[in-house]
Length: 114
Image 1 (tube, rainbow, N blue to C red):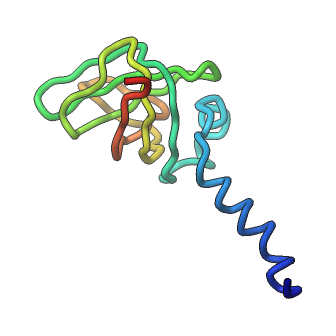
Image 2: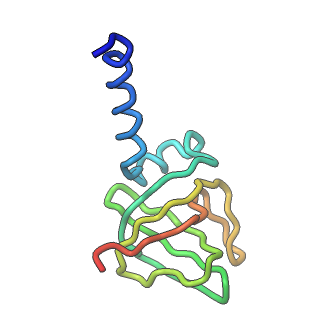
């Protein structure tokens, strides 16, 4: 094995593994400006859910914290569902006349365990 490959292989593996996992909601809540406008993947149980026409939102809990997810895709998961969400972290979100500190603007979600 060449010297270059031997030195770069651990960095490549670390980079790949970093992109595969889920971000803990507690980490986002602890340092929201670090995650602002970054795409994250979170997983948890839906604790609250509301939707109307093509906009809606829901709150998920992963055991480390809770965060609201804003969706304009139509169709939000029901309360009690387990979901994996990919989206961008946003701060100071306004939704249906209410202000939320930190939220995720959903790119997509996938129901887990079905």
